Structure formats: structure tokens, C-alpha cells
Amino acid sequence: MTGSAAARLRRLRWMLTAVVTAANMLGLIGFAWYLISDDADQGVAAVDAELHRVTTGVSRLVSFDGTIDFSYVNGDELDKGCPQFAIMPGGAPAFRSHLSQRACVAVETRVLSGLATTAVRSGATTTGYQRGANGELVRVRVEPLYAPDRTAIGAIVAVADMGPQQEEHDRLVWWVVGALVVLVGVLGAGAHVLSGRVIRPSADALQQQEVLLAETAHDLRTPVAALRSLAEGAQANPARAPELVPRVVGLSARMGGIIDGLLVRARLAAGVERLAIQPVWLDQLVTTVVEETPDHGAHVTVVAAPTMVHADPGLLQRAISNLLDNAIKYGHQPGVSAVVHITVAGGTVTVADHGPGIDAAAAAETFDRFTSTGGSSGLGLSIVRWVAQAHGGRLSVYNADEGGAIFELTLPVSGS
Image (cartoon, rainbow, N blue to C red; front, side, top):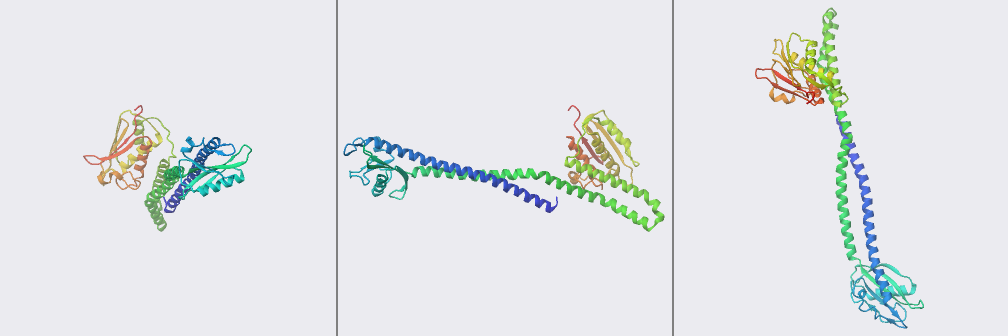
């Protein structure tokens, strides 16, 4: 993958992560805001309901027969509990104010008297916030008291401390904020993973493009140089042209084979090559490949037992041909004709040669795109490995005790 393309993909991935995370974060913030606001409203509504219960209950306990009578108020459960209340004249004909027995929160009497005066003058029931004697936030409800002729004779001021409700609300806020931070982090990580999966096909395609270009440049460099040398030789000495043409044809055929192999390798890597799976007699396929492959003076023997596998015959034929071609070309000592033994049994094709073998330290890299056992491009063996993996099989290689390399192409046997 080129550096600029890789950088663009990384930026795209982070951009997708940021966009998805921001969208989710905005949604979560909106939900958190609604949750916090709703909890605050419900808390205030609960306090207001308690204040309404107190003022309504007290107004029923107060009697008026020319003078205000608090006898029913004294000792009542409302007089002993919270929220606290006060019954005050508020500018009406004066009477002695009554304060509930329990002071749940300290509120200055002048504040209560002022609220009662406002209620008596306006004749309206009001609810709002005030500050206690120590600066704490309190909720108050002021309800006028009426005589039978609907004349305002005073007011009931109920007071509730908002501290406990505010503490409970603050705890909810911290829980919501903490959960929001955790969820944003989790969603951000998830978005990063998902964005990676989204752009992975593009990254793989760029990587495969780079591999194809690198393999093409690597594998064509030598034959192109040789072809150019032959062409320059023919140009400099036209009399040698008939002698050089067959070599040019051979190099061209070799280059065509390399390009064909590269395309198959690239299509396999990209998953474009579709496998035409069908029952194949492996022993017959190997025998046919041996008969059709030029031996170039090599001695090739085949020992095969009837074996059926489910495979793509075209790709399998190419893989076996590559193994045989590799053994014929590179599996022999200098100046000695190659001797190749092929065995087919139990879904395994074994190709053994009498060449220099494989360096144990480099055996793990044998199937890389630029390595081989004896100077080849390694492309043929790379294709064999991909064919094996595409069929759920494997390609193994090791050295024989008596010398030479042994390649084993193992495929699942039909019915196993």
C-alpha cells in the first residue's frame, strides 16, 4: 500500500470514527439532558405535592367564628411533621400567628410574613423559591385563608427544604454524566473498530495492488533485461538475428507465463477467482500433468493410488504443474539431470527431487512472493500455497534425509 494511500485511509478511518462518535454523543447528551431535566421536574412536583397537602389540610383544620381558632391544628400530624407551615395575618385583622411545632428548615419570620401579606392582598395561591435563614434553597407555597364571606383573613405559608431533593438529583446527575462518558468511550472504540472493518476491503485492495505491482516488477525484471539484450544484439549484428529469434520467443513465452501466473495469484488473493468445485480423480490429474509437462531431460516417476477429491481441476492442475516445474528446473545438482519422484495417495501429492534441498532457516519463507528453493521467483510456489488454502488444504516442504526437497500438497479427500 502506498504511503499516501495508507495515510488517506487512516485519516478516513479516524474521520468516520469521529463522525459516528459525535453523532452518538449528541444523541446521548440529548437523552441525558432530558433525563436530568425530567428528574428535576419530578422532584419539584413531588415537593409541591407535599406543600399542597399541607396547606389544604391546614386550611380545613382552621375554623373562623369571628376569630380564628387553631385548636384543631394543635396536635395534628401536620403540625408535627414536615413540611413545616405558618399561619399568619399578612395585613388582615391581626391575630397571633401560629408556627408548626417542628422546624424542618430555618426561615426568618419576616420572610414568611411578607409572603403572607402578598397572598392576602392578591388573593392568589402562589408557589416559588426562597432562601432559608442559612442561605439554603427552600420551596414555599402560600395559600390565602378566607372567611365564610370570602374575605381574606390570613394566609398559610408551607415551607419545604429542597436540600434532600437536590442531593438526590445531584447524585443522579453524576451517575448520568459518568455513564455518558463511559458510553461515549465504548461507542468511540466500537466506531473505530467498525470503521476499520468498513475500509478494510479498500485497504486490502490497495495492498493487493501494491503486491501485484511489486511482483510484476520483480519477476519481469530479468526476462525483460535479457530480451532487451537479445534485441540490442540483433540490432548490432543483423546476421545473428535468426539465431536469436528462438531465444526471444522463449523469453516472450516465459514472460507470458509469469504475467499469467501473477494475474492468477492476484485474483486468488482478492477472492475474485471462483472455484469450480467438482469431483476430481487426483491420480489421473497428476498423471496427465506429468505427461503434458516438458521434462527437459529430467527423469520423472509417478506412483499413484486412486484418490478422489473435490477441487477446481483448472487451479489444481496449475498447482501441480508449478510443483513439477519447480522440481525440474531447480531440484537438481549443477550439471546433473533432475530426478523427480511423485507420489499420490490419500489426497496428498508428494513431489521429491534430488536437488540442494531447502535451507532450514529459510523454510518458513519458502512460499513468500520473492523467495524460492533455487533461484526462481517463488511465484509458482506462492500460487500452489494459495490453491491449497482455497481448497482447505495445505502445502508443506522439508528436506529428505538423503538430500533434496520434498513438497507435499494435501487436499481434503472426498467424503472426509
